[in-house]
Image (cartoon, rainbow, N blue to C red; front, side, top):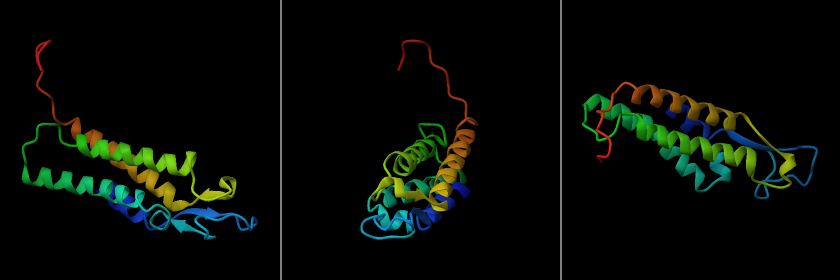
Amino acid sequence: MVGGALLALSVFLPWYGTDPDNRFAAINGVRGNQSCWDVHPILRWLILAASVAPFILAYIIATDAKLSWARGEMTMVSSIAALGLIFYNGVIDRPGSPSSAISVRYGWFLALLASLVMIVASAMRSSEHERARKPPGTI
């Protein structure tokens, strides 16, 4: 749940910054530090949705709900998806131009760390339940 809370918080912290020495450096026409909330109109909602997954998992555990999959697997899937989106938008396709004058800030690193924490925690949770083995050739 700590990872989810940190991931949600990171959306509102600075993710990108423009080079103050380059007067042409801008993200959507704006210079300075900008958060995920400011820059990514769709990604912000996907990241916030992923940050809710550990809290849903905690509710499932608290109510002892029966699931057809191991607890923590869906949290892991959403965490891996969030990690991929965060990595892509921070390393491969940074917003703004010129991209060499745009740097990632501490909010992006916090989001990356939070998604990794969520992956590790959900992997630990899903490994607590042993799956029933089936004979070969059955579904």
